[in-house]
Image (tube, rainbow, N blue to C red; front, top):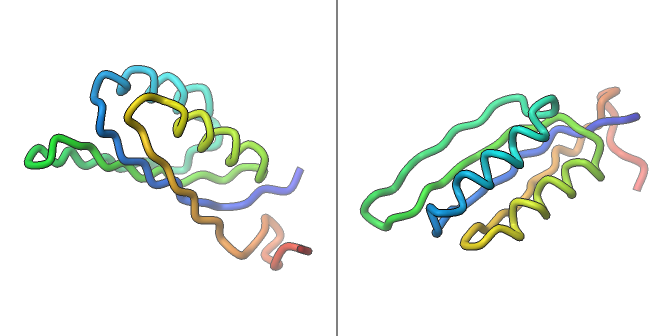
Length: 90
């Protein structure tokens, strides 16, 4: 199956959701290239970026599951290139 590289931006406003968020990320661990988290104590939020290489439907499902968590917002940016280095046929 063809994969895409994407970046999922996550803002966590409810730190009580952190454990659930980590469980979801663990479920999709085989698709995760890397992850960076920044706790912003002044505003009491955490900002996380997750780089993934996965089929588009998997990326969408991951982003959707994260966004359904209480106090968690997500936004996904897809690369224009597909696994074979070409632009997708849309």
